[in-house]
Length: 251
Image (cartoon, rainbow, N blue to C red; front, side):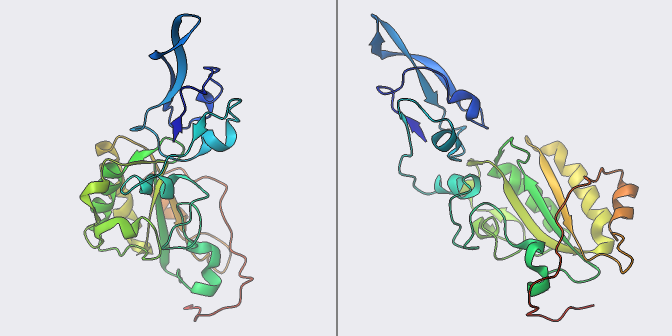
């Protein structure tokens, strides 16, 4: 994203809208206002995640904000950050996939299997792909297999090792979701791995867990969270099973 310095009035209205804090007011000697260097809003392209929030939501009074043509590897910033960008792998907008939302149709997560999503850079802090790689390479040692229909997986040079393509490592995104499944009894090792790798990265991440509930409605993963001392948010997504099954339930 760029700002046309000649159109910009320096009102600073756009600054508060940038989730990456990539917009600031700067003086430019190339343009004058009342004989003095003009103050204009400037986007730090290294910090910009190409999310498009400033363009859509800041309502620039002089329409100075515009989307410049993006080339690879910068294009992944838009794929991972702009909710209106369609990912070729999933054919849906945004960073995620169907995960458990269509589980009654896909049968992706059966009893005893836990779906895991590690949302790197969320909530709203952003992340460099090199930090995403540190996490993916750490959890790959558990012998997991990443979800193939996921835009993040397609960026890996070696999915088995969790290694990303080198040219992507310095790119910044709003968030990137690592998605895979583990057996229920693998959760303690997963939690331990994540606690270790969190000390090696310069960002935050949110951990999502999806599973089939027990017959009595209880969550089979809850005891593992309690033993690990991890807080569980009370809110979440619930699949009501209203879709037409296209797979065996795998009870």
